[in-house]
Length: 173
Picture 1 (cartoon, rainbow, N blue to C red):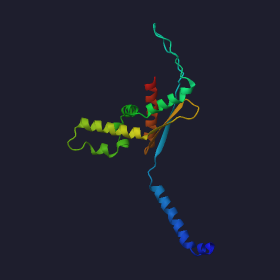
Picture 2: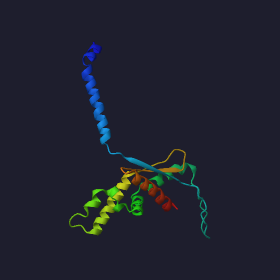
Picture 3: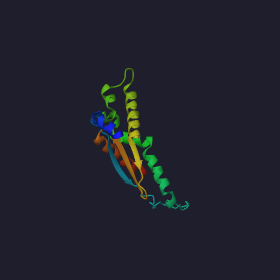
Picture 4: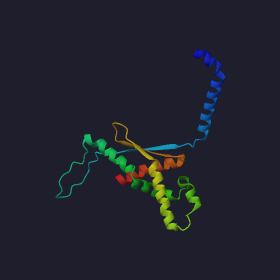
């Protein structure tokens, strides 16, 4: 009985399936591509080499093995922080980037806003966008942090991911 009903309605079912596939293909074509760039940094938690000053007590510079994951998570949160995002914005001058801020740059300051206030607003907006697009991943059993950034511009995504790695390494030294 079911097979007979499906056979009688085969054209209706075929049309519905074809329309669903067509709509899915159109949605795929209209979707804005998002590119993700990733930079990896190796974190050496057992650096040693601390210098002793006369009168100081010797402190073990090594991180215990049971705290390595905690240290990596902490560093991962540092990477995702607002301060690090602001460093990236400043190092790449993203507050003036039309690729990141779009119409905000071309429209200029709103009526009644000073140029300095508008520059600060652009910097804060760029910082929020950069912070929102970054993600970190710590592969299991490693001392590596993968820093990824997603953007609609592949070059911008790569620049920001690399700048995060450079700023992290400069800040961590």
